Structure formats: structure tokens, C-alpha cells
Amino acid sequence: MNQHPSMEVMCHVNNCKFNEANYCFAPKIEVNAQSGDQASSSTETVCTTFKPQ
Image (tube, rainbow, N blue to C red; front, side, top):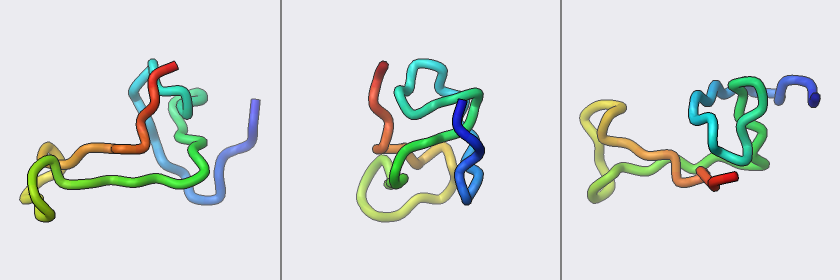
């Protein structure tokens, strides 16, 4: 198993290919608003880095 990334990003999506022991090991992370370019809460955002295993 890899060591923790330099910035720890928790990931609880078990079928994401970048998830290792609930940490994201993607080379970069992109988070976007679900609609448009603004969000009012975290539920209105989406991790577009997600790739299924």
C-alpha cells in the first residue's frame, strides 16, 4: 500500500479506482458544481476525478 498523499483527501466511494483505504490517490483532484459554476453546499458539488474500478 502507498503512503498517504502529501495532502490527505478522504474518499468513501469504494468503487473509485483512486480510493485506497479511504484515501484518494489520484494525481490531481477536480471538484465541480453540479450545475453551473456555483454551489451553496457540498451536496451541490461532484468529484469529477472519479473513475470506476
